Length: 176
Image (cartoon, rainbow, N blue to C red):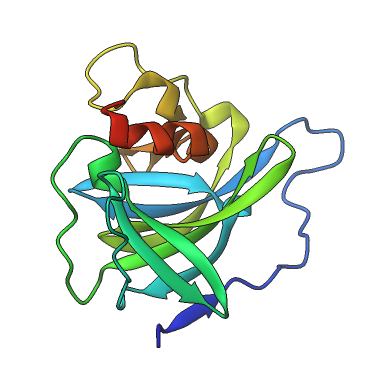
């Protein structure tokens, strides 16, 4: 059985003074192929230690298989393969981040395989820059923006776009 870490809701805290227009967002950061990436914490339902995944015959590339999450079948996507890279090597730090993705009028629960989870960060909206037009190996529509953490940049991903059901279904047909 997978070891699970539930993310409990936190009590709201006053982070800015009244009248200040700075909106702060929280992001879960993780490593993937040596890069630090992030996703909006509101999408994250839980984090699991990597465990046995049931392979699905004829599944599109990048879909590692499915796992049983308290009776629900959850597809697991290898984020590295989704980005056109080699599959994520599995070791003791490998995690599956369970996300709830909004898809038109419904939501879908999916897991993504990452090298390891780092931390939750908080960034003011003003500290997030638009994605660069060059020098990036990811599709521009996969990137929400770029934040800065302690002198390093972190790419904030657009998970709704990366894990869009239509695109994932098209992966078997050779759509990147």
